[in-house]
Image: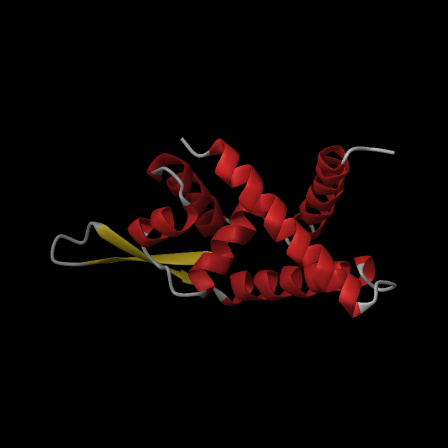
Length: 140
């Protein structure tokens, strides 16, 4: 039998592969999907997005530029010097976001289709406990 952490790592790889497939079908990357999620919750400037996603500005700038190029986002210069950019999800971006979210919800439903609710709840509890244990060990 595999160790718990090995099984968890293998499951994470499978989940990542599925996410890549779901996002690719909508013409975005997993990271860009995460960015669309943040934008949809109201983080609409680079500063807000960098804080929310814990990304450096160069990585964030590349991802934002890619989404603008793919017409999933629009940008508008604001302020007196017009140097701050405000990003808005376009209808195409919102369509992609909603499609990926729905597909991911279906994937999750399919994974846990045969699991009773009490087992799903127990798994959440145990995974949260595992996350806290790993975080505690890795904290400086």
